[in-house]
Image (cartoon, rainbow, N blue to C red; front, side, top):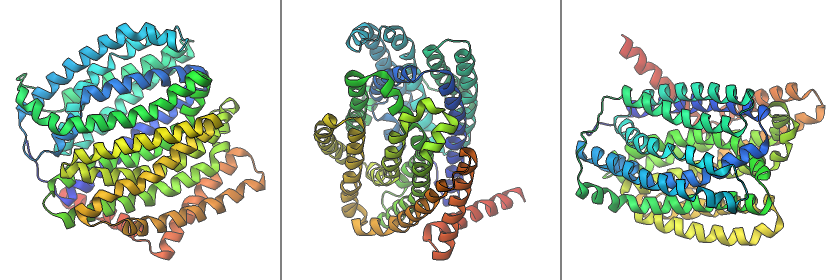
Length: 487
């Protein structure tokens, strides 16, 4: 199951991946805003707490297999079938583990409603097992159009279900059934839209082969997830689920925006880089282009979002969510760094050096916990600022291995992102001044958003930013190729 990767296929796949992320997250934003107006912060906090344990279990279900299936040059149907069966087996073990430990978690967090919710939401582990393999098939074929359609349908239908239940006073269960139906509908759609079917053959040797690469990714992902989720656990235990709800909503908008671009680039980068494993100069060019392009897009969005944060929250989430504003602004800074992390890590993944990623995550977790211990006595906002400091440190640390692998130095990376950073700061500073006119909130928001976009693009044209020129030429190339196909 090997497919030729061409530039046109990469660009087309990237467009479909952007559309999948953008369409999905547009629906998610609409649904979340509606639910935030119907439900209480503590109900969102409860789901955020449960999601910590589900996400940790999901890491073991996937076991780094998705990345391994994409990264390896030569695989066959036995690989896919073996991994699917093994993942379902792991999902079953973890489901029963969560099922029987749910009452203990309820007692520990003093939340009696946790037990039934954990037992219901843990069903998503089985869907996660199937989805991880289906997504690997899509990535190798670069058939992201199907992912776009499936995600859009699943999010739309599950959103309607969640809103309907919230409107009829189902409370936290509206969020439970929304998440469960989303996973179920998406898995069913992908299953029937893809031609691939498992052969239900199993090879333990193939599992061992993939685990030799995947266990390091599993361990590194687990460390990363444990660190970030530890913050959520501490907020709930030391403070309250309500504060976790504010924290969770504060991260929502920046993560939705950045994960759209970051996730799209990440999905396309790995199979693309893996196909050029023997061409170091080509790999460097791909990573450099990814860092420049993603920074050019995410920096101004995060700068602008931080500037309009308070007005945005008041307009779309109402005044009761205003305590989430400081978290939102800090998460804008945190999320702006994500594309740089991703590009460097995906290159290491593509080369097959998951051992290096594991070492980096161990270092990151140690530094993160030290920062956490230092900052937590000073309050939750200081704790989140410490998270940003950790991300900043690892922009540097993640880049080090690629100096050796593709000769992409730290200075080169800094030069590549600096123009976008400077223009974003200038744009954000100017846009912030609009608030002093004291116009109505909605009018102020609209003017800030449109003026900010025009200002940033205008400065890009004036200073002839390389990233802006590349994006324009790529768009033209895609449309020209589409016209040739239609002829």
